[in-house]
Image (cartoon, rainbow, N blue to C red; front, side, top):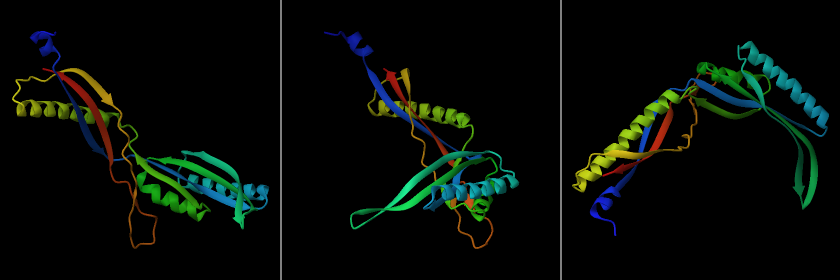
Length: 210
């Protein structure tokens, strides 16, 4: 049988603390490109290459240099009619990934690519290039949140309690889903896109002894 001293040593409170900090994105990532189709795979590839090269050259003229191939895919196209598979040729898809720190240029990049033959805009995301500073702030808030919970519960239970953490575990937090806002405006200028703000979250589990 544990004595009263041992029972006292076994007393634990466990709380999860959370923290969140907002930051302004400073990096835009776009994935766009061209998809061509045709009965002749060589012709579909050639058409795709010509349009893709035109897109690349037009973006470089804008001063965009951080461009890489994200996906290149060739697929057979089939339709089904009355239970029969019908060969419709080939699909060639070439997707470029573009990164820029000039967020005001995102709309112009999209418009320029589309004007030069891009017919696929797969992905647009805004990120914080170096989120560590924000994450450290969120961790501090999460720790304070756990301490506040411990104090509130102990006061409600009328327990003499000086929170002493004996174990702190950093939890994995899934990134907040983010969608850029396509602003609706009347002017027929570049596609307006608003990056909004990015949420940096932290979560910890703190075990207190009392």
